[in-house]
Length: 217
Length: 218
Image 1 (cartoon, rainbow over the protein chains, first blue to last red):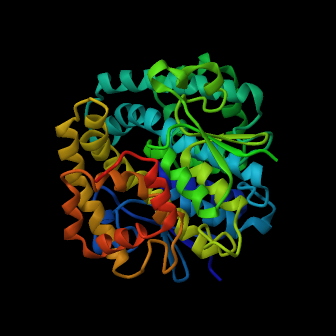
Image 2 (cartoon, rainbow over the protein chains, first blue to last red):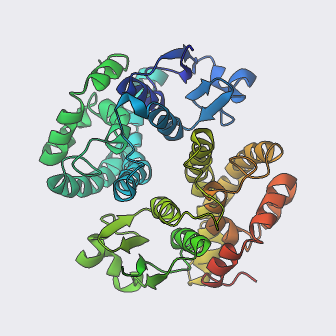
C-alpha cells in the first residue's frame, strides 16, 4: 500500500505534530522534505497541496490535506485500530475534554509561546538575526499567565483531558520542545505539575524519535 | 436532565458561534449572562467554568467545557439526528477531516483577521470605543490573500469541506455577520463564489436566529 506521504520538515513544529501522531499509531509513511529557504513552499507544486503555502501537507492516495491539527486527527482516526485512541471520539464527554485542551493549545498556549521560540531560537539560528527582547519579555508574561491555568489543571488531572494521554497533550509538544532549548526553559520550574507532565509525555518513544530530528537535540 | 447553559452574551461573536449550533439541532438551552463591565468573567465562579476568563463557557449537567468551537462540536455530536444535516460527518473519515481542515482554516487564517476588523470597525463604535484603523487596514490586506484561497475552493465545491454544509461553513458566521455591517463589506464583491456562499449561508434559519441576538446591523 505504501502508506501516507507527509510534505514538510522534521525541524518544523507543525510537521513534528503530525510526525508524532504517525509514530504513535505506527503508521507507514514517507517524509518528503520541502525546502523553506529556497521558497519551495510557495511554488505551484506545493501550493497545489497547501494553498496557504505552508508546511505540512499530507497525501493519502487522492486525498490531500493541510493544517497540521486536521492532518493529525486524520492519522489518529485512520489508524485507530492500532490500539492507540488519542481522540476518544466514541465517548462524548472525553472527546469534548480532548477538544477543549486542543483549542486551549491553539488559541491560548501557542500564541503565547511561539513568539518566545521564534525570537530566541528561529531568528538567530535560521535567519541569522537578533532576537527582539521586548517581544520575548511581553510574551513571557502572557505565557506565565497561561501556565498558571495549566498548573491548576494538571494539579487535578494527570493529563490535560483527564487521566488519559491524548492528542491534546501531544499537540503541545513541538513548541514546548523548542522552548526547552532556549534559556527560557527555566520558566517551567515555577509550575511543578506542568514540569512533571512534560517529563512524563516526553518519555514516550514517539517523542524521543521525533525530538531527535528537531533542532537542538 | 437539565437545560444546557451557555455562559456569555449572545452578541459576542464567540458566543454566537455556539448559539448557531444549538439552533441547528433545536436543543433546549439557556444563555446565562456574564457581565464584563463588573469583572464577572474574572470571578472564581466563572473561572471555574473557563479558566482563561473568557466567554463562552458551557454546562451540560456535569460536563463543563469552554472554547466556542469545542462547545459547537459537542452540541453537534450530542444531538446529531437524521432530521438535521450532519454538520460534522464523523461517520466518514475523509469528509470529517475536510470539515476539521476548513474549521482550522477559519480559526487560524480567517477569523483572526475578520474578528478584529469587525470588532474595531463595528463593535467598538457601538459600545462607545474607537477602533484601530491601522489594524483594520493591515488585516484587510491580509484578508484579500485569504479570500483568494476561499474563492478557489468555492469555485470547486459548493461549501468549504465539499458539496455539503458543515460546521466549517457555519463557524464563519459571527465575524462575517458583523463584517458585512462595516464599510469594508464590498470587499466580498471581488470574490463572487465567496459572496454567493455567504448569501446562501445567511438563508439558513439557525443563522437568522443567532443574528436576532446580536447587535443590529441594518
